[in-house]
Image 1 (cartoon, rainbow, N blue to C red):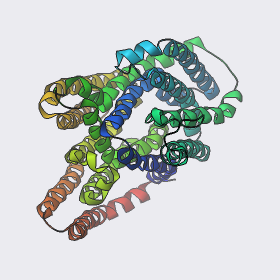
Image 2: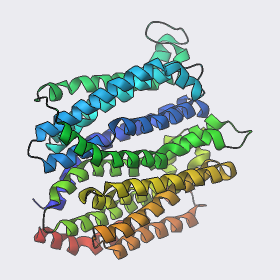
Image 3: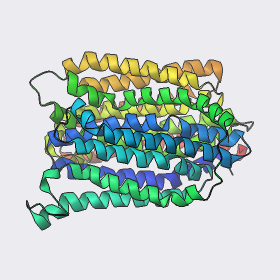
Image 4: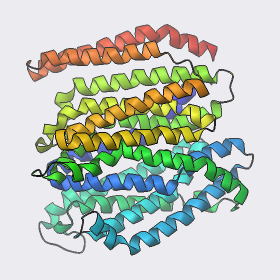
Length: 487
């Protein structure tokens, strides 16, 4: 099969769970932002920021190591068994220690009245970590149907419970507490819903665990660990780039403002960029195993270059479609949160460069130079921390948004420069630059119509979007046909 068509097909299949799931979870944002105050949603935003760090720490690069060594080693079952045993042991240790220290951790992050939040998240992270390798195995085996089915069940349970606790229960029980519902829990029901969904997902994957031959080769484990640990450093630094701003806001916003409220506004408006994030995450699920399996092909580098160009085209389209339809998109967050909508284009562009950076990362993953990945993301983390500490006290959460964009842009440029030395790929920089510039030009052109009536403005904006689509199709039609024939 044409490798680009194969990648597109896999992206579409994995995207069923990712896109549908993220979109449905995105639809929970109106529920949260219309139902809870900005300060209450700030609690949700901050706690999930901590969770991302712990999730990366507990998987410590073993997921990517599993893909890498499954391609290198004949005995794929041994690689699976080692990965699974390693994460199971570390997860159980984390569960015990986390529950024991939950009270002290709650005090440390200033949630004195809610130590139960910490315990709930300890279990959520544990269950999610235990499912990481079984899900990776399904991807490695191209068993997309089961992967998608389990993901959709998880999503359905989580969303269903959110709706039940936040919408249905208050109407059924009012302000009266009972065995099923207590109004005092409030945003805690978001965490309880996720906990139940994570537990059921872990139970559904048990057949994928008990059917294997359990072995543990210490030599192979050390090889995998050496490969994985730089990815752990890179992952942690990456989480600094992605979510640390939501933690720093609490400590560096100027005095006199409701800090949790500002975090809530920032977190809700960050969700505007979720469409870009959905595509990038979906693409990553399919691309990582695709890139590894395609590495030995003669035209591998040419394929990677074409993938990058079309990735940038799609991301530019997503940026433009979101911003040109902001009159509609803004309805997804409550009125109290819309003061932060000006950060949406900044964060969309930031996520676009994050996606490009993820594409570029193939050079150090394929060449085994994962230390460079760690170095690049550490540099990004330093940039993120410095800029946030500098700009948040001056510009508030707007400074945090700009820090994110600057960080991703700089590490993308650095990755490209080093990659061209270590694993040169002839990317079509001219085309990528032109498509991104076209998207930006059309967006800024649309800003000239800000005084038009909303309906008329939407029509004109979507005509601009059609202009982008037509130019892309006309420009790439012959090139796609040529690539298809070559492969």
